[in-house]
Length: 261
Image: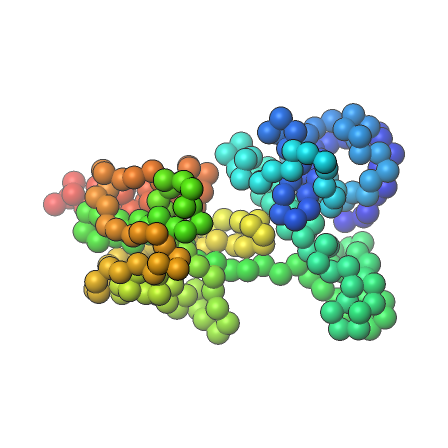
């Protein structure tokens, strides 16, 4: 967690990030010596290791090729997590240059991911926003929605949302589903989680079963929502996402029940 001023001989993978974007020249995370990539004089931290080499964070931006970290999500899960850590830390450091209590300039801790105020002695840590995402089954169908944020894409996916103050994860699942689709669900069960640096979320995946209600989508969140038979699906998220896993798990459960019937 030491902050280094690069002299040129440092080697590794370079995560240059600011504003939720990461530097991906030619669509790839740069690797090699700092001098090879014009990084001499910049300040950097080591955030992990991949393929036996350091992964460095530089919280700055380049003049071009600043891209979404989604572009490397399919390359390697561990690399995506490390780059995601860098993206989230870059945003944390950007937004915590000054103390929120007294306004004094803060410094980076050398022993942990934190910002310290030497004036009032407050200590700030990166905040993670918990989110839920849920695959919902109704007999041989799954609920999929075309989200407003995907209006320029034909992508359909499962429902998701942020956990609110005072909620359990299960409470958040039931509330978000009802708010977005006006249906009730039962048999809510946890599946898996995925760090999601957009900008600092942790996605927690669930499966659930339809319990009742007439499907009516919330137009402020969704363009459309419908029940799709498991073997007649529209375009769904790529395999590196937790949304895809929830869809595939639902399909597997339907097929297993059909084989056993």
